[in-house]
Image 1 (cartoon, one colour):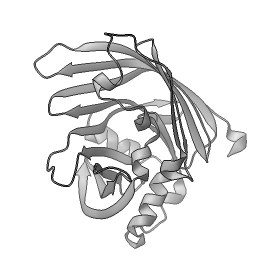
Image 2: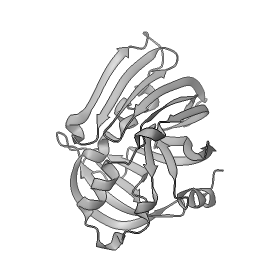
Image 3: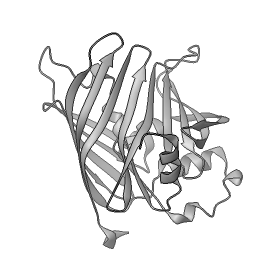
Image 4: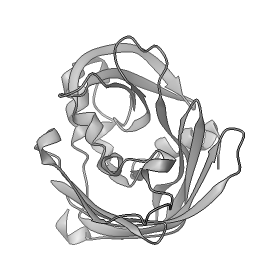
Length: 247
């Protein structure tokens, strides 16, 4: 399931649940009838920033495989419990059976709607989430709420045609290039740059594998990397409960 043909097949389904870094996006059939060429850059971003979610919850257990180039692969347990609705998402993340965060995102409030609380720190001399290149705020895709700068030339990621946007952090020089699937408005790949003078990204996140659970596709695996290291997150045990009565 780790090739561009699978990705293309998954995105062709009218009812898809993509958990991209545990950010849950439910796509429905009304997206198919829109003429995307008539949408402005801000309209595309608005649809990406406000995913259509059926209220529910999910539990995701997996392993983080992290390796510095030239070094040995290290493995760490990762657990996430999520609750979500059409207006917000809350996730409790536990890394390496110890370090814990509560992260939430109100979709209507953008960066102001992002909350991150560290519940428990990593013990001294033990590997932390930051050591393997993961940011808790990635879980809710808060970077997609950064300030719009420009829409770049369309690109292709794993066989999918994508809109590409440059978004600027509101308080620093950091910016991202976000590749958004042009049919479903779902993020596919994000690259981080330290400032405008940097031509090479220092961090990249890409979807790499999927699985169908109860008629819904979820992201089972994604990769975060930079020129010196690579971390792969693979969720081996996943469960999702949707409240169909609250659509």
